Structure formats: C-alpha cells, structure tokens
Image 1 (cartoon, rainbow, N blue to C red):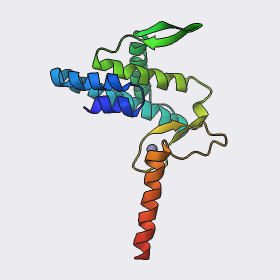
Image 2 (spheres, protein in one colour):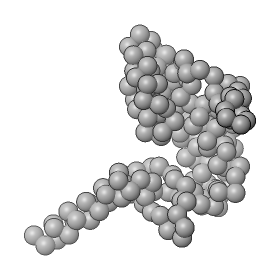
Image 3 (tube, rainbow, N blue to C red):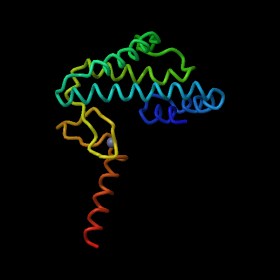
Image 4 (cartoon, helix red, strand yellow):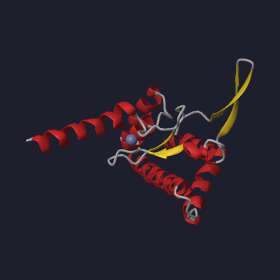
Length: 166
Ligand SMILES: [Zn+2]
C-alpha cells in the first residue's frame, strides 16, 4: 500500500505500524485510498510552501492554507507523553490511516517555524523531489539520502561516461 510505504520512506512510522496499515488497507481499501489522496495533497502543499520559501517567492496562499489545515488536524491529536525526567510530544495511538499524516504535517510546520529553515535543500537528483535538512557542517550536502539518491546520481554519471566512451 502506497501510503504505508510513504510513511516508511519518510521515517515517521515504525515497522510494526507499517505492517498494521498494510493489513488494514485490505479491510478498508476505500478509506486507505482516501487517505492516500490526502497524503498526496499534503505532500504537494508542503512542497509548494518550501519551494516558494527556498526560491524567495511569495508563498502560495492556497498551499499554505492546505498545510495549515493538516497542521491543525495533527495538533488535535497531539498529547504529552511522560518520558524519563519529563515529557515529550506524541500523537494519539496509531489506529486510522490518517495518523500517518500527523507527524508529517507537524514536522513540516516545526521546520518552517524554526531557525533551520535556511538549511532546507532540494535534492540534487533529478528523479527525486524530496527536500532535506542540510545539517552538515559546511552545508554543502546535495542529496536527500546519500545511499539512495547520491549513489543513483553517481551510477547515472557513470553510465553517461560509459556511453560517451562507447
Ligand atoms: Zn533525493
């Protein structure tokens, strides 16, 4: 199921949660489909807001409104969870598919409202549309994920060179 994979890829879901969502998607395929549409809408809104910010363009009001709607929905499911020596923010128990969207919306909002925003980069891989937070010392990182996109880019360059040689 695409949505579960999306949750897995973005690292917001534990493996057991992914498994559970997979199982439920067979029981409730329509609900799964609906949430997948929301996930795409959310991803697009996040993309458009970050893209505009990175390119110093006016943020599209529609995209920001959509993102805010997901952020507000996520906030309605946030709770304080006791941890050693204090508390941390958590979400309601993962039950419905929709829960996949909460941490994504929240993470995007946190980043947009943080002083880390200038370090958000678009992945250099043309096949990839991910943004990532460049936490490297010199802020020269180019790929969202070295093993995935970095290597893919290297492989593509390698093939391009081989082709030219041939
Ligand atoms: Zn990438």
